[in-house]
Length: 81
Image 1 (spheres, rainbow, N blue to C red):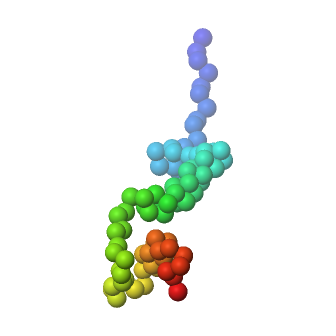
Image 2 (image 1 turned 60 degrees about the vertical axis):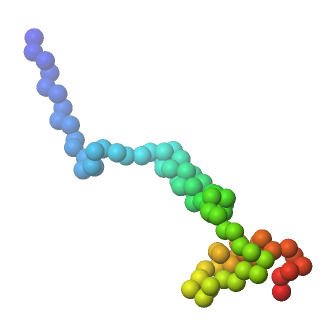
């Protein structure tokens, strides 16, 4: 009794055979969206931005709207123009 011949395996051209199914792709997309969404919120809490009462944004940072928004967020409502 001899063993029946094994069928040939089909070799697919994927590096290290890392393939995701639809569920795994959705999970990866959710993780990326959560990370991208939480990064600005987390960055505001990590980065120190201490200013005095008469702080002026330097000219070199005049196009930094993130910094401008943070400064306006720290001012009381009656001090904005």
